[in-house]
Image (cartoon, rainbow, N blue to C red; front, side, top):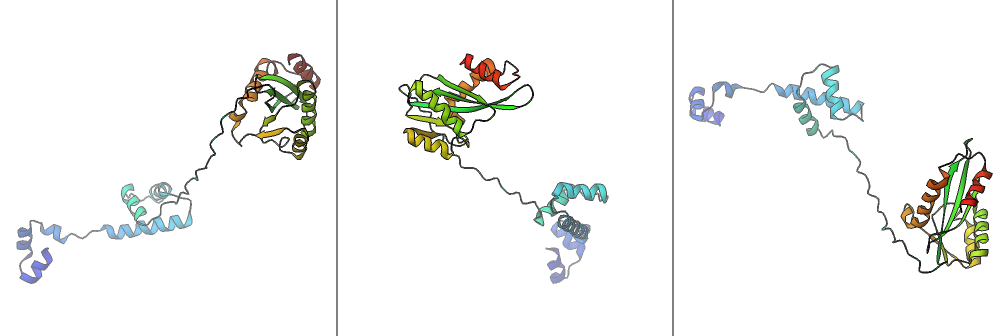
Length: 241
């Protein structure tokens, strides 16, 4: 506002400043920070180009503690933002999870069996497995198979032994373990006319009946003793069952 009046009206600087309510020193003031801002911008560009994983915090600490510049962090951050040097953080993808299916409740014996594996180890550190089979209708334990290895053939053999005295179930519920999704078990189920119901991956609550049975086995005897041999575990499981 002062410059056009001075040039057009040929008025003195003192008179124009008095009319506009500004001081002559304010009119003559020229910012000295433009050169410093350019220097700050140059440093920030070089640092982010050399250290691509550095954000504002590391850049500012380097300028302050290593180079000794006393620039205010708000000023440096404002230039950092103006240069659009912010690290691009890739947003996390939200996984679309399937709605868990409700746990079905059978209405008669041998409607649905559930089976699941457990793991433990002997006193010498050798790992062994347990295969638990129950009837979902009355939560009755139908069998506990114990050994170091229980492949799909052992699973079908155990089920055949239970069917001999219990009868054949309409369906068997299990998870997606390799023994359960094998062709051996699928072929056996087709021959027996039994449907295999797989739970949804990552939804153990859909196999809650046998999971609760596993907890009983664990707390009532499996975790109470230190077994020396696989034979001891098999004998204890047979007497407990």
